[in-house]
Image 1 (cartoon, one colour):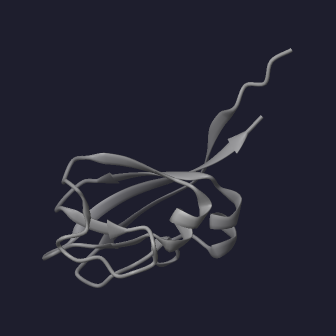
Image 2: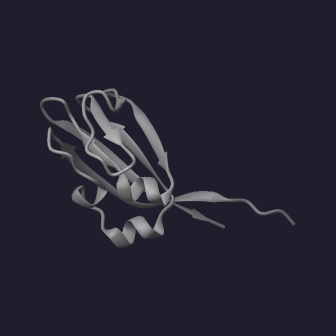
Length: 102
């Protein structure tokens, strides 16, 4: 008998990011949501987004996600500490939280 691990969509949100740093709890998710999930898929629809995973506020020299790109962030610590900004304007995001299941 083998064990198959499957990630299941847990919760979805669409929101915007501006030049003020925000975390996932600012974008429609709760702390309880972030304790229940293992990863997130983030699609940036407009404007480049900068991010940090250590809880610090990102700048234009931090990690970046280009407009039109999708990234997966793994790990509960990273999800709880994720902060996002744009260097100017507004970015539209689509985010799905994923829960690892059996």
